[in-house]
Amino acid sequence: MRGHHWNNGLILACLATPLFLLTSAHAAERPNIILLMGDDHGWEETGYNGHAHLQTPVLDEMAANGLRLDRFYAAHPSCSPTRGSVLTGRHPNRYGTFSPNWSMRPEEITIAHLLREAGYATGHFGKWHVGPVKAASPTNPGAMGFDEWLSHDNFFEMNPSLSRNGAAPTRFEGESSEIVIDETIRFIGRNKRSGKPFLAVVWFGSPHEPYSGLENDLALYDDLPEVYAEKTVSLTSNETGGQVRRPLRDVLRERYAEITAMDRAIGTLRSYLEEEGLRENTLLWYCGDNGTPRSGLAETPLRGLKGTMYEGGIRVPGIIEWPARIAEPRTSQIAAVTSDILPTVAALAGHAVPERPLDGVNLEPLLDGKMSSRPKPIFFWSFNIRSLDGREQEPYIDPELQEGTTPLVKLMDGILTRNFRNYHYRAVDAADFAGPRVILDNDYKLVIDGSKGSGKELFDLREDPAETINLASRKPGVVEEMEKRLREWQQSTLNSLTGADYR
Image (cartoon, rainbow, N blue to C red):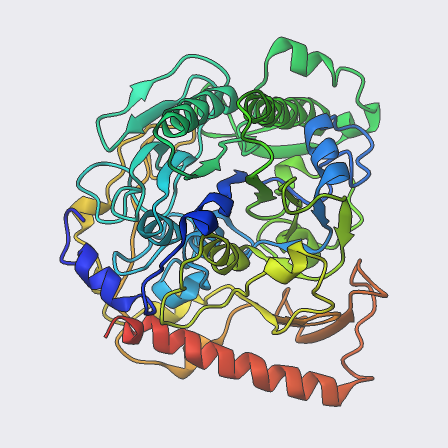
């Protein structure tokens, strides 16, 4: 790897042994893997989940044909941390990716590292957002295990500027989801000719604000209800990069056009896989990275929105297609999370997982209809960044290496690029256990400090998916036991944050 002390030999030393061995027959059975993620795409924003206006025919078809995960969760209610969980199988607080624009750490072992060791070609396309994508960055996609990438430090809109393999950004003309999928198809084609299985991680810039759309897509939403025009929302201006207030009806028209364009691009990918004889043994996994933001929220049956620990902040669309293994359509109510992706995909590729704490579980039994309940809880936690105030903040990575290069529309600190940060964490402090946090153990969900003054809230999601009835006072024993497990998990997570997993 470039730009830091970590190297492939050290990574291999951290992997569970023995290293993977496959017969040629076993190797032939391993699936190609494509991981798709929408940016700020909430659970309710699909046709198959009953949205009154959105047209998502491709995602609807995937949900009808494959494994529909009705209780799929992002590991965090915001983007960078969730993306880290996909790559590592670990909660982002273990390596200091606390919030958007906080980077990963170079010592993390990713799904791309594992599959590359398993003989897969690995490519990343689209939004990265766990460090700069430039060549010098120790957390760019190449350093994190990808053979090639066409990526952006953050989100992107029409005509995006993207970096190829760490080079200076280049402007690409066109609709961004289409551009990313076209690049993915070229990557797949090259590896089909070489005979290598592939891992393609495709992270769209849509439908993150600011919104825009092609005329044909916008026209689909010309007749949204007039009641939406009565409310205004704040979002980024495509003209100035600053904040502006606009009628929600106009904003939704553009947001929904982006979702439909992303849906169509996924359809282009599926058609290509079919034409090339690859669809049968390709696992296609779609999800969002967090719930719907305030700027795009119309009606939802869920409580909360992006940034909160309620279902509207962390529950996202989740669909897996793999015709060779999932021959009959199924819908699952078993809770699953983005941290499950690494252990699941590693198992399917025949590779051991890293010998360090993981927060995800292998969902292979779920793919086969043999999982009746989740074997361990899912934990969520927004680290209390304010607890770091007044303490020495020693950069984990040279700040110059954390400076991004790919421009976007939205201004931050007066610039159109993004800079990242991550700090050494030397010792556990009692104040660091604070922050909104959750333990989800199958049907019961305990939320602590989920919103201002909320204290402890216990919900039975099977009976109350909208989180309207707080059972905490009726079931104090359940609360006590779940809170104890949550605290133990936080202790483990903070131990990881000190760097103990790397020693």
